[in-house]
Figure 1: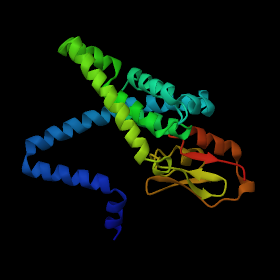
Figure 2: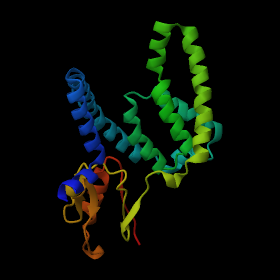
Figure 3: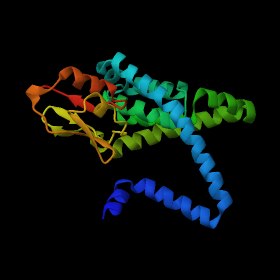
Figure 4: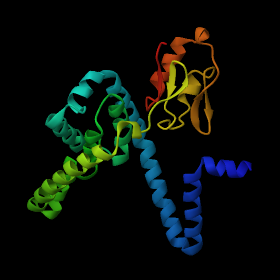
Length: 239
């Protein structure tokens, strides 16, 4: 039962491991090459993601929620669409580096449509990519492909905003009155448990809140844990 429970808690990892085992049995050479490629991407992520988390935390502290809602919110209109294209196009790093930033932007009021535009632009029309595309495939090819891609992104972002609602994205779950934690966003970094072990613990590789007495809370340690969370998954509000 314990093994089955562990497998259920780590279902994705179990599926990936099973796929590698099958690959090694069916084609050992392909299995070895897959492990090498996976190792390369894991190494890349370990090098890039800490920097992304730091930059995201700084943006979260420096950019007020009102600014995000004004320029990237639902009422931003064409201005928000344009800025979303700019943010996605000039950003650096692989596409997975955009996810923590988009979590922060949505939390601060960015619309679903503009988040889709940022992610799509980041993936397919970044400026360095366009420059290389023009170099190897020609400026005309790049320009036509860029125009068609922008039109497609605008259409698909509008459709996405009609289908996906704000509540469909991972949101905050109230664990205790006044204290909120988004276990869907939690990446299991353990920083909150290290900063305030009396209050936070790890359950199933996700952060959780222990039983506590509000009057005995150490608010300095609590704020330290909140600030340490790279995905801003913890919030505390006075009752």
